[in-house]
Length: 213
Length: 225
Image (cartoon, rainbow over all chains, first blue to last red; front, side, top):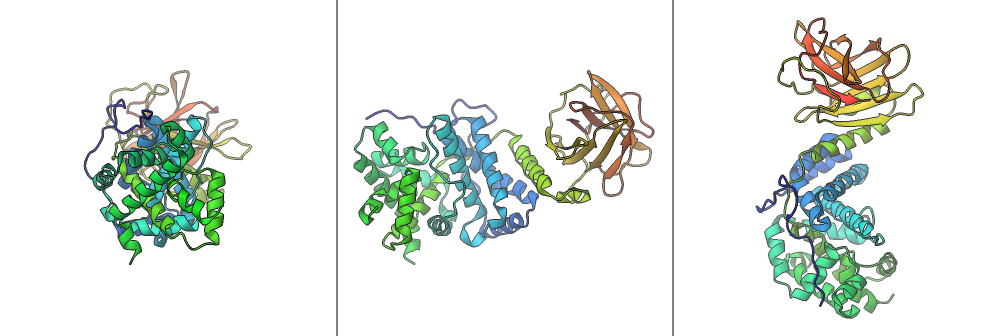
């Protein structure tokens, strides 16, 4: 199997960008709702507050995808602008605003990564289909317990091949065909690894339990 | 695309790891088939992966850049005229410690400047300026002959005996444009008898009443038109 490197730590970045190993601060439900209302009312100071609350999470995600501080900051900025431009459509009943922002950061970062590597874009600008809306509502039910430490712990508990496939898809922005090529694995095997790995994470995250309620 | 294929691709779809064409076909199938409830849960799981990345500290300027970009976009889509002032909250820029005699140098300050080129034949330039740790100040300048019309917002009224002084920096030389004080809302507008050009640096200092022949305090703001 080929060796695949993904940016996983802050190694090599500027000294003022240190890793914070503490549990990321979470926005409470009420605070998220209040920020959503203010964003809908086009209050720019709500953007400042949201940045203060989730800027580090957002940058950490973008850096994990891009492995470059400057590009990661661009991705975060673009995601905030996406959020601002769509602020009139924000509905707190369909997902918390911090979760929406993280989705936008991920999409922007993946688009930039694929563009940098001369791969075609695969994501949409905004999560607006019905699957995304229902998924956003669902993940919000467990958001308070999904800390960085817990997600990492769940990922580490996966079989290595499943973990790698999921990391290459989510953080590497690879399609299942690209993963098969990169890992020299049959396409059907890659699709199974992605699905089985996610099914296990779904249970470990507590999402399956919420679905059954 | 049939149910088996959709099921096989469900993990890849949930992670955004399908091609645009596969995505289109899957969503077309989902619109007419209710046998794939697991996809929503898998997609939600994919969203949860965002927190697999550790928190990290970006550069100190990122928040300011985002803030500036949002406000600039707000101003750009706002109706023209005085209402643009009402788009965002304007307060005084944070005072900097009074320093010894200072010669303004182009680029000496680190500030975030945003320039909007409005659709205006009179070269109406709007800059949003924020010094580190300070608040947003709006500087609007209408260039032309024989002088420049300014419209400023975000500066607090000064106590008795103090004035704001506007400077233009050209070829590394500071030219006094005049002194002014703001109204109770922190705004001032007026004409300065100095034909500014695009690319000139302007700065505002706080001086004793009547102004000074050269800046005696560090600029509250500095921006290039």
